[in-house]
Picture 1: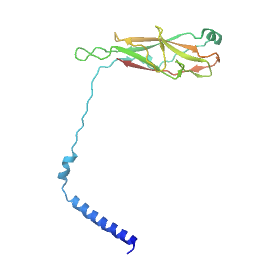
Picture 2 (picture 1 turned 90 degrees about the vertical axis):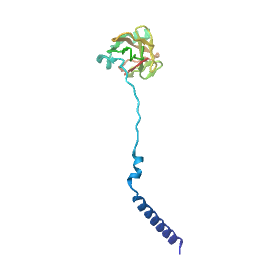
Picture 3 (picture 1 turned 180 degrees about the horizontal axis):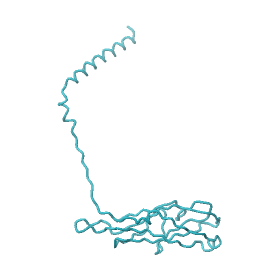
Picture 4 (picture 1 turned 120 degrees about the horizontal axis):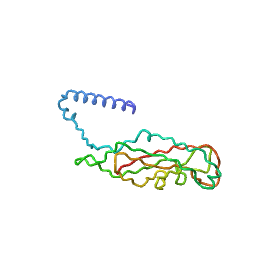
Length: 187
């Protein structure tokens, strides 16, 4: 008998044994396996009062920066300030004696492309970036949280200024734009 014939005979015998064993298993009643068909799902969560809603006019804002004179911008190193606000409404910070809200402060973080600590602009102009500052003077850095703001009423207006800042001596005139997102965290 050749090796090939022996291998074929072995596989035929093996498949016959496996088929016989499979038929024995099918004769076992399904009630023996019912215990294995049960399960359990655990879950947990919490219910909290909301912090604030962002007023509709603050969700998506467009600030028209106007036209700057390149000579004045070069001399001063900064452009004219344009104001904008983030208006928070319907704030609920004290949900009563049972459910005291855990936050007493909020913190705003502005997100955008970084140009040496300022916000990058795109377009034809060169040598400028955008600066965001609070009315009190604190300057926003891309991706870094601003100082905490104490929460003390249900209608909060966060006031900021936006202005061009020169980044180098190679100023070039042209159009520019930028998209800056913000995030509000509560503490």
